[in-house]
Image 1 (cartoon, rainbow, N blue to C red):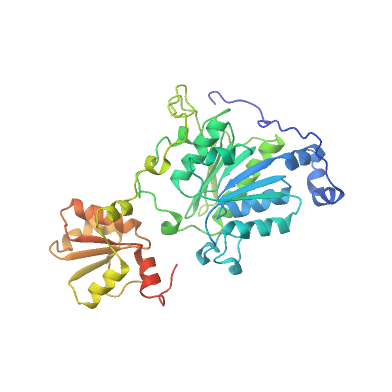
Image 2 (cartoon, rainbow, N blue to C red):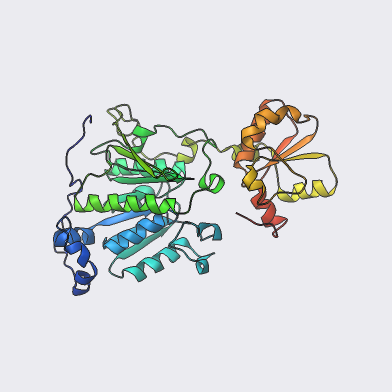
Length: 396
């Protein structure tokens, strides 16, 4: 592999005066009897620090296993609260945690699991203003995020600070994992120099994710972090691991360092953290909001009650339409809109909706490009309709 460094101890952690207590000898006994770990390795784990960005699907299993393994200091960055829809995959939280800060919930569970580990929390959104300050004091950074702006932010901060970035991503039945470490191999931008166009890739909230999948990928991320700390095995530097849950197959793709990479290449152009929201582009629903092409749930309700002539189109998939729908709507999935568009009357007002507003925003843009002038997007999708108009409808 071009330029690959054949070594295992990338971090070269020094244990110094770190000692184990009698309780820790018993707790980590199954590690201590492994020659690849042993007393020295367990001391490395205790002296190491790991920052986890995100306390959600990926952050749940990897924080559990790193805490159980005895990593001395674990930081977690998150700013969200626990929602009932999280519990299908975010196993660190329970039903009674709904509405509670994810960080408070996670810290409580991790400290109960292993009081020897110091859990530090950062209840904030990671931004270009605070990322370097938060990341600089940790040995390893683990990316458990689900959005492109934060993913590129984590990558660039790790490159600038010369930190390893243990990456993972999940969607529906598929997952990816790698270790991006620009000091010894490629970074995330070597693989994906630019993000996809806004709205092209649906989020897990719109596209869904099998609940067990983040457990698999998150555990792989935890394993990669432990290997880096111990200096054993072959970490996923120079490799992208692809997992297909339906076929139960792992596939490994060899990666190359891009000499033209804008941050870790031969002539880097990125020297500081940038405005990542702008870099990743404006989402279609933001554009529609700014141009007045949105309609609120309350406004739509009033129009329907007044008997106004509206074509109400649901652009979700049939299996979603079965769960809930706004009365009077017709189903035209976004994937079939181009085929069905000739059946629509351009002189009538058209309102489109999906689950949260992203897919229907793309549908509005498509219809506008075809000459539809009386077309609007339901802000917040059917989720907003349920929250503000009809809470008796099931949510998903």
